[in-house]
Every structure is written in structure tokens, then in C-alpha cells.
Image (cartoon, rainbow, N blue to C red; front, side, top):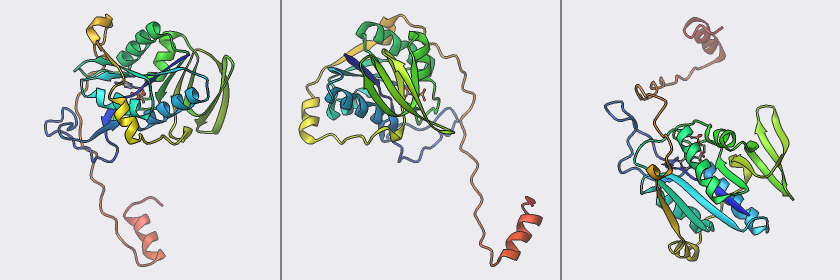
Length: 249
Ligand code: AMP
């Protein structure tokens, strides 16, 4: 049984993102890039499923430019078996990414596709849902626990009201929450081993998929700078400011 895990290369979450002066996007040159954080949870979960004897191959897919291979290598160093890079230098929207993942899944025939719940750069939270729709497979989004039983999975989901538990049949798509597990660090021997693991490179054009953007980005700008806070000396002064300056009471 195969598991496909989708990993995206994004600006590292510790980096202070800067908007380009011309407002066409954010600076990515000379900026530290990493695997999208919930995608690490997805990789970890796939490895745990394999280690429990419920899968025999973990395949990592990333859609992006040549450098996305580094992100795939990170997942291979964690323990995944092989990688697939679908190469494109263009920005791909979640719909295009979903079509690509679905197409690769039709060929690889996994029983589980794991993704992150959300990419921290575009904050779309759409890809898992669209992959599920395209393949017509059941989906479990925001998974914080996945238990496999024969041909079924019991998945606990993080929702606004608390925790929801659902049952799905395989094959299924799940998007992983940060609370799902604690991703492992790659050990040095595994980093060395990962260098020899195969990464298949597919040119996006060879998949015959329409990846044209459906969204036109008009402008990117910095959020307004927050005003400096003021210290008040007592409650009376606070109430006075809330009433007369902020006019919130
Ligand atoms: P999004 O719908 O853009 O918030 O992304 C949700 C998840 O889809 C991510 O956490 C990844 O698992 C996957 N994903 C999105 N974009 C890509 C990409 N370019 N390559 C591989 N996986 C991706």
C-alpha cells in the first residue's frame, strides 16, 4: 500500500517576510526556505503508518521549481522512500496543484494521500479538499489523529466546536493539523542515505493539465504598522481613554 505526501517549499516560518517595493509579491531571493510546517506532520504520519506495517511505500510529491528538490530530500531524510518533483517555474494555484497531485495519484495508485492543512504562504486551505473532489475520494481535513483499521480510517478532526471523529473508507485524502504528531528530525546517517534515494522529475507540460491561473493578483502590501501602546497609571485613566479616545465604551 502506497501513501503519497504533498510537501510545499515555502519561506521559513521564522523569516520576517518583506513585500517587494513594486508590490508584485514578496521577496524570495536569498531568503531561507523550508518545508511547509504541517507538511512535516503529514510526512511523519505517513512514516508512522508505514512503520506500523500498514503501508510499504511513502512517496513525496512537490510541485515547484528545481529547488523544491531540497524539500523533497528533507522528507526522504526523515525516512520517505522516493520523491516526485513536478517541475514548473510558474506560480501554481491550489487548483492546479490539486489537478497535478490527482494525476500523479492516478498513476501511482496510493490508498492514502496526506497533505498539510494549509500552506503558510498563501493560507489557501484548499488543496486537500480539491484533490478529494477531483478523485472523488472521501476527505478528512484538519486531522489530529488517524487510526487505520482494515479498509477504514477513524480520523479525529480539529474543528471550532472541539474534536470531531469521522470514519472514512480507503482510498482517502487527509489534511494534517500541527497537533497530529511531533515530526522527527532527520539523523545524519539518514541525511546521507537520502542522497541516494530516487527523485523522479516530471515536466509539468508533460502532464497535459491546464495550470493557467484563475486568480489575478492585483497588489501585495504590508499590513498597516500597529500604533505604539501607552501605559496608563490607573483604572480611571484607562476608562477615560476607552471612553473619550478609543470611544469603545
Ligand atoms: P493550500 O491549499 O495552498 O493551503 O495547501 C495545502 C497543502 O497542499 C499544503 O500543506 C501541501 O501539503 C499541499 N500543497 C500546496 N501547494 C503545494 C505544492 N506546490 N507542492 C506540493 N504540495 C503542495
